[in-house]
Image 1 (tube, rainbow, N blue to C red):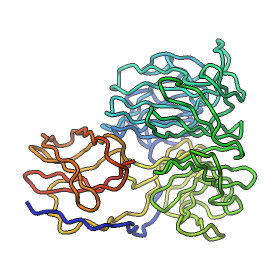
Image 2 (image 1 turned 180 degrees about the horizontal axis):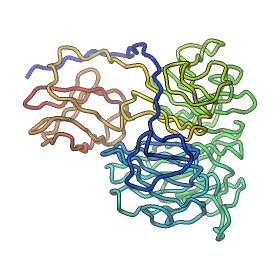
Image 3 (image 1 turned 180 degrees about the vertical axis):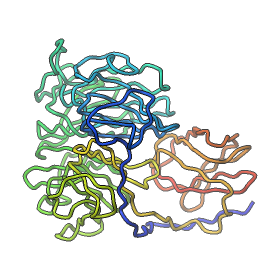
Length: 451
């Protein structure tokens, strides 16, 4: 077999493309659907959707804020799966495969913390109306119950009343929040912790996931006004979108809590969330999406409008490309497992929108045998394990190389086309790698990032 030769590469080339915007899920009407319906732009309905996050299997988890639902879009057949909630809302722990069981009130941010295998994924939710952080246990399959419980906040549950608001650090039962909005995860040696944008308390707070003090809350930063969406980079820096007092986009150290301004609010209208891909920061700014080149200082021309109305005054619905597309009040965003598009919660239009990103061409793999099969990897960036979807069948060898060409893993496997293969990566250092699959038909490669 021909040997692959790798060259050290520090950047990627992004080809300029149109920012094509299309309706992904939701038909625009206010309402909901029951499990099993097709999840598309015709048969699916939401009411003021807020947040979204992908799990290890590529399922998309959604907070349908106006319906008080936690919804999953099943990756295998793109069907709508109601996992937790009740249309009238409430504050109840319990197991559910649909309405009742675990109940929320106006859920907002959501993050999937990926486990060693996809069966160990855990879903964490900012339950804004209950002023609490909720947890949904690992996903099994549609039709099987999942248990939701309160991780931290909300005070004592009282039948018919929302959770208690306040500002208290301490153990899970004592901690109080006020309208938590954005949520992320930082891994550490003891199980990691959640980072919460506690919007009503003007604070970025830490919620422990350690076994010894699970749910215990403490402050990271208390200087950011009305923090909403957050994004955590590979170095565990916390980026925060603040629509108040011209703060704009702030960068917070997860270790010291110190904050610096990245994009001043004077260049934005009122940012609600952000996603970073390489050196581009995509910012949800009311009824438009801005693109900030992180290699250059902020200015009147950086960030620039990527998609949506230029003066941010026309808030409506229209699919299209670049500035011809219209949004109506963007809440939070996430990025697709292959990093090719944004998933945007377009609250005012009761839809999730798909916003294509420029195609990335990675430089650095030379003289590779032309692939006979193709595959996708998720999550990417990854930590601990990945799932591989491919059209490759039969005996294969999966190998992992550093970007300099050093082989750090090799495993003989049996692959079946269109069936995900779960691969444990072990404790590889964070960085850029090349995953190679060798089969009877040839060699396929793909760059992945480990964090």
